[in-house]
Image (cartoon, rainbow, N blue to C red; front, side, top):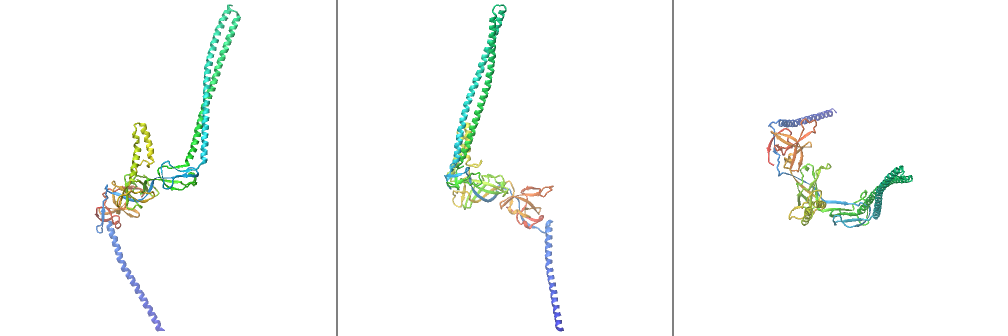
Amino acid sequence: MRLQSRKTWIGIGLLAGLAVCGALGVFVMRASTRQPAERTNSSLISSQEEGRSGSSGFQITLKTIHPKRDPSFVLSIKEPAFVEPYFRADLFSRVAGPVKSVQKDIGDRVTRDEVLVEIDVPDLEQQLAQAEAVVEQRKAEETLAQRRLEVAQAAAEGVREEISQKTALADQAKATMDFRAIRWNRFKGLAATQAVDKLVVEEEERDFLAARAACEGAKSAIKKAEANWIEAKANFEAAVADVRLKRTMVQVACKDRDRVQAQVDYAKITAPFDGVIIKRDIDPGSFVHNAGGSSSQPLLSLARTDIVTVVIKVPDDFAPHVSTDTQASIEMDALPGVVINGKVTRFSPSVQNKDRTMRVEMDLYNGSDADYRKFLVKGIGTVFAPLATNDLAGVLSLTGGSRIAWRQHRKGMSGFPLYPDVSSEGASRVVHLLPGMTGYMRLRLPCENAYLVPSSAVFSRGGQPYIAEVTNGIANLVRVEVQADDGNVAQVVKVARKAGAKSATERVRKPLTGQEEIVVSGQGEIADGQAVKATPVEW
């Protein structure tokens, strides 16, 4: 028993010794590996500090360039493009009713003002007939009022003549009265000398009194005639007002008839421009609703495809460089190997907030060369036709008419669409673009007024773009704002905090001057303020 107990304690002691030796070995190994690492980190830290202090003991050799401003430099961007018809219109019905007839089908070509669809509207036709009858009634009332006006005018003229007649009779009665008064006074004098009998004097007095009464009656007749004149004049003015009223009622009836006529005309859907039917959703007998309702659907869709518009959306970085002189080239997915060259026709002078892009369009004639020549001849003839007359009024009238006639061929004030300048792998050929085709458009944007740098010179730190500018052997990280970058060259401006600014958001932008020495590669190896050895290279 004692022997076994002794062996047990000896075994436990050996195991404990082995464990202590193993622990010491691990500690020694960890210490030996930690000291070189610490020495390496401290040496790197000291080297970086020496680099930041400008010591020549630790320098990185980097390639640098100077910004260039050369008219031959262009920013080239390639964005998705899609083809739209020059004009497109969904035709709705302005009245409700069953479709009487459909004149055209999908793919049919139509001309301006051609009837495409007729809708049966018997109720509106009856309203139109009733409105026509009302117009005739109002015209008859106007004619009757006009006749009454003529009667009132004649009556007024008669009363005015009667006033003149009564005035003349009053003058005659006064003259008679004056004569009778003189005669009576004369006979009274003779009677005083007993030259005549008193009976004669009394007869003269009677005649004088009768003449005076007649004079008073004549004056009353004048007043009565003047009163009749006022009444006749009022009747005449009332007749004039009645004629005006009846004439206005005729105009109201005509307007009401024209309104119903317009509704009847809405039953005929006409083409707003020359084009081709690209969609049809109705057949004879289909009931259509008024376009003002929420359930209305387009009856037909019309597009003008002899001219098409190719559209792209340019990112806001490149938007300031786009103009109507910008050269463009188009490659359609459905036409491999074919490149269509041209210029920008129009662009929206606004960047959409939704996707930060600007709409750019290029119009292309979509027919044969012979058709394009006919198109030009027609347009030029329309424009210069007014010059064939020597009459200034005629020139102005024809000029206005020619503008209206030519307006259907263009959008706004844009001129003739371009005939596609096509190049392909092999012989050139005429292309026909269909609305809805997709592809890419490349724009060449000249930047002769701005200094450019290689795209590789711009790098990111903390989510912000920077360039590394070398000054007196020291690399400084300068924050920039990228105005345009096509993957090869970039246009940037320096961004710095405004002097005396209270907020970090108050910054100023300064363009490059061309004197900067900018690192083009390896910017990730340097820190701000680190000493570097610059090796200028050409680019």
